[in-house]
Length: 594
Image 1 (cartoon, one colour):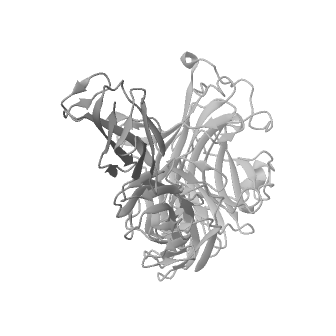
Image 2 (cartoon, rainbow, N blue to C red; image 1 turned 30 degrees about the vertical axis):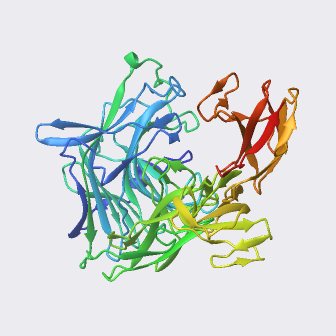
């Protein structure tokens, strides 16, 4: 599966071939017979379209087929790619991989698959292999891998057998890569492939129905990281001439599509040796704490333990983002559920990416040497760098109130409101209410509720005040409302009539009354009532029997235009009203016109 290979002659490789030493398989660690006609999503993941190798964009899901009583999965390569970005230039391939990972433990494991490649043209590569990755690409990335790889250019009796231990991002070849042809091998027919992975050696075994034959044993390169099992099919490009053939080209038309298949009858994993471990490890997350909020969180940490005798092999961490239902794969967010290697085992840590505000979950998976997996509880946590918003609904800015026992409003935050506090200021003496008394120090006191809150107010004397609230979230981010000025006003205005004067006498040219009005908060309006001695009232156009108030011009200094008055006695009453509705009506000023 890499660009550069070291080819050894078939004769040299054949010298390493010998009949396999019988090994008694012990505990079954994993089995999938592919009998259900669909891929078990509990056991398997499928590479998405974000993965590209040579001339192939992955993204195909496996199909399923049957021949008689044999049912199998079909890993497919299409010459037509439905992705418009790559149509006509890239094939659409497939790779499936187990979610479970395995280690050789103390006695080794055997990974067995019965597979075939059907009617495959040149330029196709397909593989059955194990792979484990850890670290962050490309700085700390490392990979362990054991391959059965089939290059169609070389014929159906040829194999590439590859092995890697701690391969870096910059590595393009491995000293463990070998290739050769094998008598009796025809991978176009059903052939059993086995990888026997021991702590001190790895064996590749094939069985075409005539019994197991070990075709390679490697003792110098020793993979030791947990690895999953994979099957794939893809097309090479001309950067790997050994695997490339120009006769196979992608097509830009779906009607011209050709599909090529690798069939997988089953895959089975067994422990080897005289002892077995079926006890899963335990895993716990110490940081973050469930439901807690953080402004920043650089890493997660926790512990793991194993009591089954195989010892801890690895700890992996799954990071999930709720906002778009995606998982962190070590370099980007993806829809494919992914676990990433933590540092350490009994005490482990994992460096987190930069996290945007929102809700996340974290789960740790501990695996032992026998491949048993134990899972921590899933921890939900929040990243929150944004202050809440707070609004005051009552009092309303600049309004006046006869009585006001509480301020009310709302607050909101993406994660949650922890508390709301209010500040009440009295302009008359520049003091603040602290919940029990008026003080000179700016003070906030507790409101009731959070997203919908109320702030109790003391008994207020007439005058001007302001109120402001502060909403605080669970991490301590605080957001202030706008400051709302309001007035407490329970006293009616005063009003004075300066003309006419009481008991004054005027001629018919007297056409305007006037006066003043005042209020601690403000005079909203002044109205006048003009009555004749016969008990009728002026309505602005005629005299009527009903009490009638007419608007004056102005408020604190007001005037009222009188009609042409005939000789006689009149009474003028003035009504002054403030903004909250308190009003004063004068007793009445009697005057005469002659």
